[in-house]
Image (cartoon, rainbow, N blue to C red; front, side, top):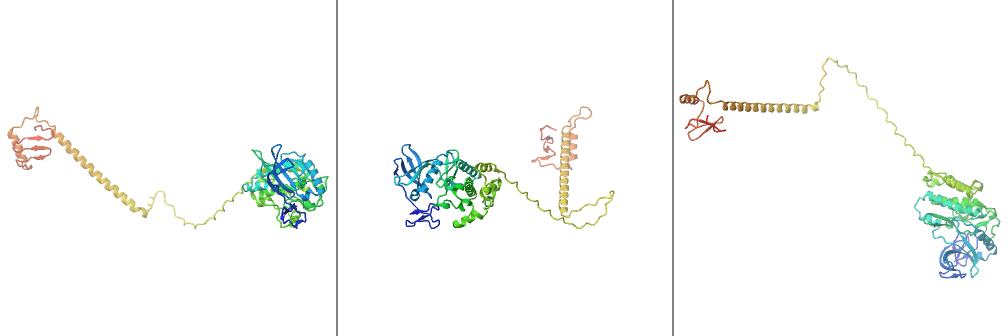
Length: 454
């Protein structure tokens, strides 16, 4: 199986060139785990396959440290012009020491003559996998922090006269130092220094269509490219991180070229309205994606200033208009009534629905009053009768001065006088009359309370 070094499409072994680009296909070669390369590196596993070749994780036997080995395809390794340019680029790349750039080692030939060079091994996903695994929508401050780190790494390379020319999520590795994520730029395999001319075989095909700048589509010589080409690609990466969509969509290389050269990208806020709360974000991305290099930030320093100027400023809520008042309803004018004289008695307002309740309440009040009056009269009679009885009881039997003791004859006369009004009981019975017992056999009366003889 063979691989196109530009679009990474696979083809059968008998195919010599890519039917899309016309470029020479690279043979896919896999090294087995445990193989020793140059008596220095022990292959552990394959990390990935790119347009320039394959990348493996290996252990540096003497230092016992993990390293990433990138092997160029056999076709590129046998191209004298390409290897000469690539050797000088790697030599320059070794001078770039920055936390946002993957450290590169020596360029060496393997036992079969295939070129490879060692790189810092980053224990982490590439930016593409990192974004796909993150919650949606992507956190804006984190996206800006990642963009800032990539820009700082590009600034270090640009200061050495290098242009990456292939900034894309797959070429950004995400390292974690235990406190934060650190983006690291990798795969400077197709960088071009200002003093080198563009390679004649691969030419302008050394680009990724999703992020390539218009000047790359126009075939501008590598020596004429500068850092603004990388800033265009950085704008496309930031656009995709925030919106989840690429800046343009096309079916083939010709369509991509037309989009990048003539079409205006939609502002990110059209796809994600909440980005409007970040003042300056739309302006930054659209400026990075300007068709003309002169309209983009002049360098990384200006780009960083624009990133730092972005602030979170939520728009004030739009006031909801108050509902319109209901139209006034004009009621018919009531007839004027003559005033009632102050001296005249006010007419009694009759409430027919309340009359039964008022009449019933008045009747109940009168009935209660009569019952209370009868009870008072009854109690008064009882009290008067009690007072009379007490008076009779406390009357002395013998008068000290005027009254003399009654004689039997007088007592007999009193009894006979009372006989017409009092019905005496039979000798065998006793009759209770006004609290006094009368025994017809003996004659004397006794009080029931204290049995004193009267």
